Length: 262
Length: 271
Image (cartoon, rainbow over all chains, first blue to last red; front, side, top):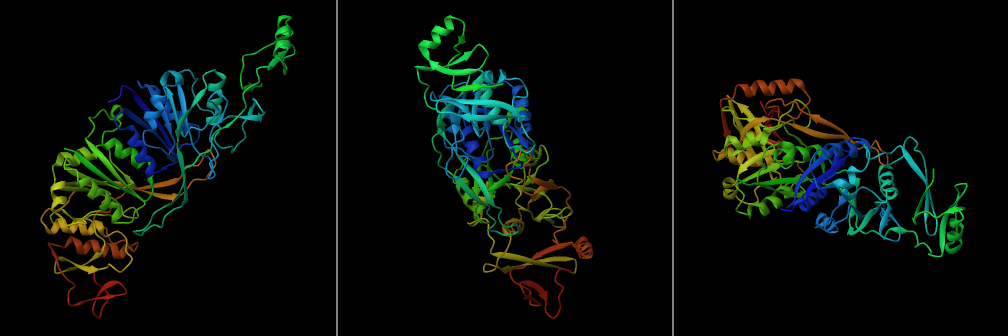
C-alpha cells in the first residue's frame, strides 16, 4: 500500500461513463483512498461541495477526475511520481484534439481544465474557500510571448470558468499547475441506446488524441516588460529599463508570462 | 469471503448507483466506518444481454478465490447496509426486489413458501458453488416462460424465443433454474431503480440530467401492465396459489399466437 492517501473529487451530472468508473478504480488500486461524489450539482458547487468534505480528512492529495475522462493505466501513479504540488494531465477538448491547456514555455499551465488534476493537500489549502468560482471570466489577449488577462464579471449562462479561475489563481500565486506527460482522452455521448431491448448499448465517441498545449513563446531576454510611473506597462530594452529603474522612473516586475490587469 | 461483483453497463451508469455500490462494498472506508468487503468489480461495457453478464462472470469464475458473485446493475438505488444483511443471511442465493419499469411493479415472483421463483439481476448475491455447477453460459435469453394459474397451481412452461427479439429473460431463466433445483433465491428487501427522464443541457453549468427513482415495489406485480383490473385479477389469482408446477413443454391446450401464449380457442392464458 502506498503512503499516499488520495481524496478523489468526482463531480457528475448524474451519469458517468462506466469505462471511466472502471479506469478510476483501476488507477486507485493499491492506494488508500476515498471518493467524494457530487451528483447533478451545478458548476462550481459540484467541485466545492465534495472538496469541502475532503478537506476535513487527512489526505496527501486531492485528485479531480471528471466523469467523462479516459484515464490511462498508471495515470495516477505517473502523476504522483512527478512529485509536484499541482499537476494536470492534458486531454482533448474537441474531436480534433484541441488541448485543454494553455501553457507558458516553462511547462506551467496558465490555464487548464479540471478533468484530471492532482494537487497536494497543502497546495489546495492555500486557496480561500470556495476554491472554485465561476463568477469571474477573463478577457484574454494572447500575444506572441505573453498573455494579458483582465477580469470581468461573468454573464449568466457562461460555461465552466471554475477551471480557468482556479489555474489562473494558481499562476498568480506563483504556484502554477505543472503539465504532466500523462495524456488522457475524453468520452462523449452521441446517442442513448434503445430502452427495453437486449442490445441497448449507448453510442459513445472517444477522443483519444490530444495536441500539444498552445503556448506563448519564451520572453526575449533583451526585451522586458516594465511598469511606468503612471502604472501602465510597456516593453523596452532591458539595459535601458535597468537604467530607468535606478532613476525611479520604471519598475521592472518579476518575469511572468501573464499580465494580470485590474 | 471474497466477492466478484459483476457490473454490466450499457456504457453509462448512474453516479449515485456507483456511489451506493462502493458504499455497500465499504470502499470509501473513512466514510462508511466499516471494514471493506474483499471484492473485485468486473465491468462490462455496452455489451448485449446476456453477454454483458456471461463475459465478466466467466472471467470472474476463473479465479477460484472468489466465494460469491454479486450481480449489480448500473441503475439500482440501494438501501444502506443491505449487502452486509445479504451476506449475514448466509443464503446460497438472495436478491432484492425492485420496480421493473414503474412504481408499483416488481421483479420477484414469489412461490407460496415466500421464495423467489425468479428475481431480477439488479442486486443478486450467489454462492459460487451454484455457479460452478450450472451449465455454461450461465445467463441465457433463448427461452421465455409463460404461465397460468389453474386449480390453485401456478404453471409455467418454456418457449423457444431464440429467433425472436426479446428483452431480458436471462434473470427469469436463472431464477427458475435455481428454483427447480431446490436452491431458490431468497428475497431480502425492496430496493429502488433509477430511470433517466432526460439528458441535461450541454455546455452549461446547470447540466444536471433529470433522473427519477422508482422506489415502490408492488409485491408480485409482474404483469407489466398499467391496466389496474388486470393487475388485481392477477394478484387475486396468485393469492390462491398453493403450489407451483414447472413443465418441460407447452401444454396441449395452449397455442402461441403472435408470440403470445393463448388458450386454444380462447385468449386468456394467465388466469
